[in-house]
Image (cartoon, rainbow, N blue to C red; front, side, top):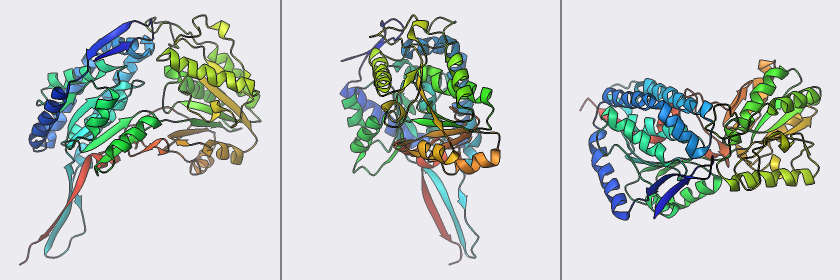
Length: 461
């Protein structure tokens, strides 16, 4: 069987790779087992040096990596180097805190005893990464897993297979011992079987809710850790006292960057009635400045979505909302590349929306946002929480104390004030409800990649 990556730019086959055979999978698992027995004994300082060298090698190829990323998943070439910069930021930060995060936990002194808790590696970590932010989502788990003394097998999306190969190339250039980082090109059935392999000690999955359910089913009865970073329907609330220009610029970028294909992108906006008309007017004007086009064109600011079926799904949500009374503010004729049956899709801003419409409740993962008028903070919070998802949420306000107090009421993994759609590696990246469970990044992110081992030593006998 063969993996084929169809570029959304021109529908050409950009990458073609054979899927791993059963023998190759078995050898990868055996090699991982051998490597982990040695790697866990390598001093942390050496692990850090090798990871930092790998990051440097990766960044050195940023121009080629950016071009490949553009062709595989369609993000405009003017933006793809930003993902390389994000990998560097996260990788270096996680390395910088590893010593502190992995240090033994000291407990209160007790006469005649030495007591502490060590953090030991869990073994072999399987990382399953998606196509929309293919390097950033992978690196969230890969670097801390290796720093913690684990070995990693990466299964990347069929849409972005070169990402796995580029990471392997960077680790090889850095001199990482053989078997500590490996990748496999797999179909869904082989991936499910791999989760069930006795060698696998942990699974980090980023993807859809349906995909997360598959991972949980496959891991049932194995008693292993499973980290799930799933979808989102992330809300923004613009209070009456907000800086409207800043709120428009930030929220609209959060909604349409990467053609809206971000799990933590803004998919619904609630605006206080006092500033609603101003916000909508300025938001529509900003969206009209986008240039929809081929992702390899440096002038393009909005590329195609990943495939035609994804565009059709969003078109369906928009049509249904309009039939239910929503008002569309963007004329697709302003974006000549928009065409039914292709991945090229004009951005859309909808008003007169409510929660009876799928576009306000169901993940869109495309360039559309609904803007709903609210009359109070209480109404906004109620609507923000009226969702099956809980990944991120943002409030725009000049009143920081009130904003934080409102944030305490929002059901979300990350709460933003006056910014959105950003992962700070110093903060835990986590979701609630159908947005998943578990955590990556920050010192907390090391916890799922290690297991505690208690030492209770009696010194006087």
